[in-house]
Length: 120
Image (tube, rainbow, N blue to C red; front, side):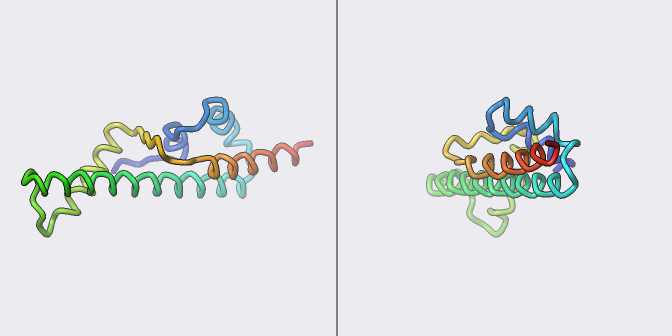
């Protein structure tokens, strides 16, 4: 997979545009501790979404195998993982309608609030 930055991931996550813009515009203004916390949350979220996409692709491939359109062999999981990584890289859009990112958004908002109150 190509080198992806935290800000690249943030741009693709399904947050409200105003919230996303606020984070992107102010990221460099946050303290190193806040930046680290934001990066940690973003990468954990990205990792979770990637795992969900792999699981989805495995389920689809299992259905294809049931219909004799996919081979269940030793390389099955590696093929699915590579296919998923390629999809994520090609599209670099993660659309998980059922994902609840409210906890992630709340954690990021807490960091932003901490930064705002330090300025006052």
